Structures are given as C-alpha cells and as structure tokens.
Picture 1 (cartoon, helix red, strand yellow):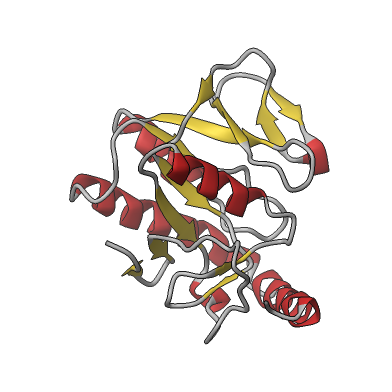
Picture 2 (picture 1 turned 60 degrees about the vertical axis):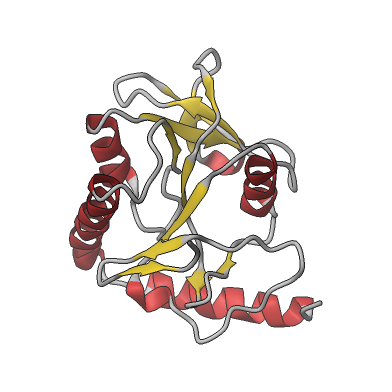
Length: 194
C-alpha cells in the first residue's frame, strides 16, 4: 500500500507541472493527440462501438477533438456523469449540438434523458503517468472503479491522454489502481498492454 501522503505530494507536483503548460501550446497538443488516436483507430488497435471520453477540467488536455474525430469514424461517443465519490462513472451519449448540464464538480455532462452507453474504448484523463501504464488521478477513484467494472463486464481499451510533460518516472500505486492499455501524448503513442 502506497503512503497516502506520497500520492498527495505526487498529485501536487503533477498539477503544478500540468498547469505550467502554456495556453498557446494546448490546441496543438490536443490536435496531435487527436491525430495519434485516429492512427490507432485506423490501424485497428481500438475497438469499434462506443467510446467514452471526458470534458476537460482545469488544465487537462482537451480530448474533445479526438472524440469528435472518433464520432466521424462512426463511434458513438459518451461523456461521464459523476455520481457519489468513489462510484463508477456512467456515460451518456454526447451530441455536441445538444445542451449540456452542469454536473458534480461543475463539469459539463450530457443532460438527463441522453442514452446511457457502455464504452469499449475509454479516453482517460490524468494528472501523471508512467511508462508501465499507471496513472495518477485526483484521488476520488472514479476511473479506477469504472475501468474495473467495465473490465469485469467484457473487454475495454483504456487510453490515457496527456501532455508529455505529465510523465513521471514512477507513479505511486495501490492495489485497486487500474492500469492503462495505451498512453497518447502530443509526442508519442505508448502501447502498455497487449
């Protein structure tokens, strides 16, 4: 079991590093990640069907260009709806033209009444990652529980999307932390698990 203080310190360091990325560099990084995810999809490395993503919070990499491209490729795309802390996320169908609701933590989410999806592909936000596929999240456990539940119910491919500057030599992990299958940054595409 990792010392919770070590994880908190790593989160603070990772947030400072991510926040320091210049606003002017962010759109190009999002476009590069979109192009890398498109290459993975066109190369047959990503499952067809429903893709789950996220609405960017704070200084997170904006995955919406990648999600819009996946929609163009024929995927249905869902965004998460956060329930109580520590529960799995529910993904509702995202229509970029439809009104959004303000969810828990003030994050935009698809409004009530949108179809619920079960993603076979999940683009995962993070504070930090390492080359073994571990990610450092915010500590609420949403994505770990979501991935655990999705993996129990069948195959899902988890793609961590981040800025290259978010890499750490080793992310502090616990037994419940779920590993990623791929990590995509503006600089490279890392296959972690086959």
